Amino acid sequence: MTTKELTCVVCPAGCRITVTLNDAGAIESIEGYTCQRGKTYAANEVTHPVRTLTSTVPVTTAQGKKMLPVRTDAGIPREKLFEAMKIVRATEAKAPVRTGDVLIADFIEPGTNLIACKDFD
Amino acid sequence: MAEHKLVIIGGGPAGLSAAVAAVDAGLAPEDILVLERDSEPGGILNQCIHAGFGLHRFGEELTGPEYSGRYIAMARERGIPILCNAMVLSLTDDRRVTFVSPETGYTTIQAEAVILAMGCRERTRGALSIPGTRPSGVYTAGCAQRYINIEGYMPGHRVVILGSGDIGLIMARRMTLEGAKVLAVCEIMPYSGGLARNIVQCLDDFGIPLKLSHTVVQIHGRDRVEGVTVAAVDEANGRRPIPGTEEYFACDTLLLSVGLIPENELTRGAGIDLDRMTNGASVNQFRETSAPGVYACGNVLHVHDLVDYVSEEADTAGRAAAARILGNAAPVVRSVKLTTGHGVRYTVPERIDLAEEPEDVRIFFRVSDVYKKVRLVIETGTGEILVNRAKSAVAPGEMESLTIPASKLAQVLRSGEEEILVKLTETEGR
Image 1: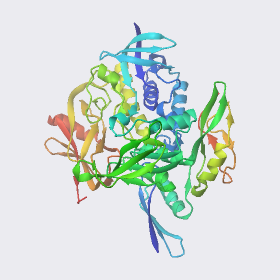
Image 2 (image 1 turned 180 degrees about the horizontal axis):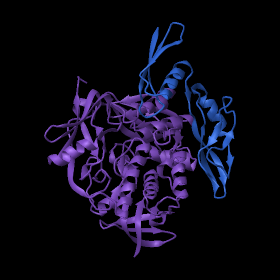
Image 3 (image 1 turned 135 degrees about the vertical axis):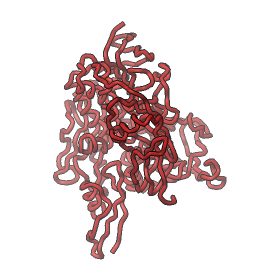
């Protein structure tokens, strides 16, 4: 039996969550979370941690090149953040772009997309 | 002179929320003018591309541009005029606003109400007096954030960050993801000024060391930063560097994340009372300053951790300004002053203006140190407890709030009390 102390990163409250694992590495109990998102975070964090990746890509607009903020629309495995950044760095967009537009579908994980976070005309 | 009912100075999250709230409270959108000095509205959120905004407001995790995008859309839907590239030069206590813009030239407006929503700026190297040369490569964290996220320039490759405020932590991750090596984050205090979640996801995730009770004592390099010397500081001796603990980091960039200062030059120029602890105006629960009809909200009033709370505060100011203009504000019977007791650095508001039928008032405050197992207490000058709440841990980096119920304020109104004290009591040793 092992216990892991986590600080939840879901929201700025930063709850302290304790996860107890049995000898087989399965989750025995989760304590200290104050919302459902926090419980899910803690369960993921001890088995396969995921993070939302945010970055920017160049976008060609009528006013010249600008930087378009982008993010993944779901968490991706933490260990794949740098692999994901390699793809982001090779990505460019063209206006018009709308917040929520999918720039790359099935990004890193099936069903996860890289989406635009700002409008450019 | 032009006249306008409500002038809002600043088109960031505070100014936009205030404008939207004023319209929703019944003010006609054409009676409002939002003045924004940048070429687009949205304020600092435009460069805060990381996620974590809006969990309280919208129940989802948004990036900064998405959060501001929603408020820009709300303002547009309501037809609220926003004038960009407009720099306000002065404000008077009788609400005359003078500004310049390419579209209007030099313009003065007499307003019935003004909302100050200018935000804050970063403390710079000059405020710290770090010894050493003055090479390029020393940036505030927010400046580097703008270079990378808006302009698309990478300001350096080997980075040391001084100060563990949230922007510094966010930039440690951002620069790491962009291929830079972040060697360390140094914090002079024995605790971080940033949110716990940012320590985890910006430093721990990438193995970046957080050196508490450490500071930069020397900057090296002639044209460009070549390195910095870091030393431990003595907590017991005025946080002076401890000789013999110096460590040299070869780096080309030093980022500073050492605090934010509410941008109150206009406020000061108008002769409005400022609170020395918040560096913002001293306000009542409607965020009205000492100048009648002049309100303040967001980071110009006090530095917030969360934009969600900025929007909430701006709603309060926007509704109050609308009520003043529409003539439906409840008359004030008398004012009660809020004072700070043990462990509390400041409160916002600083006073409560009581009407005949008081409403609930939410008090925001920061504690002055890290405490475990405390009770947060609001009591009257004569020791009658109004609010008493247990909290397992508090830290200066995380804003606290307590709500004084209307029924308790009605008691205060009748009792003739002139002061309310906000304090914390320690239920066990630290």
